[in-house]
Image (cartoon, rainbow, N blue to C red; front, side, top):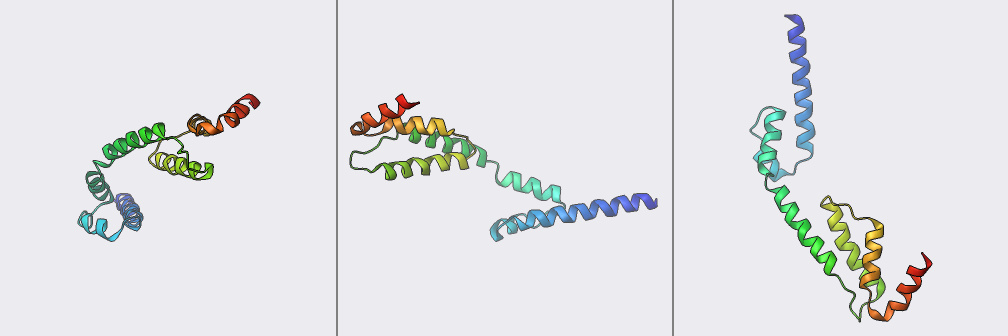
Length: 129
């Protein structure tokens, strides 16, 4: 009997610690939504229910970003550094949404999509590989 009480006490302590950690990661608006559940499991389930559609939204966002990445072309009036910045903004958004893009793929994209006035530079870079 005493051992059961100790196990129950240890489990409650773990649950309270889990709840505290979860609460620390929430903003005030979300906290109000999940304040009523009593156990960390119930809180976690409430959060899962709240963000259920987030995965679908992330997939749609990734599709959009992939399309944007593939369609990127350097504008004739744009500097290389501005174009590079524009590409990296999209690449970082893609990476933030959970997809890995290799540096090689990014470099290939940049070389493929530079303004035609840089063709001689692209050929020199590709030949030097």
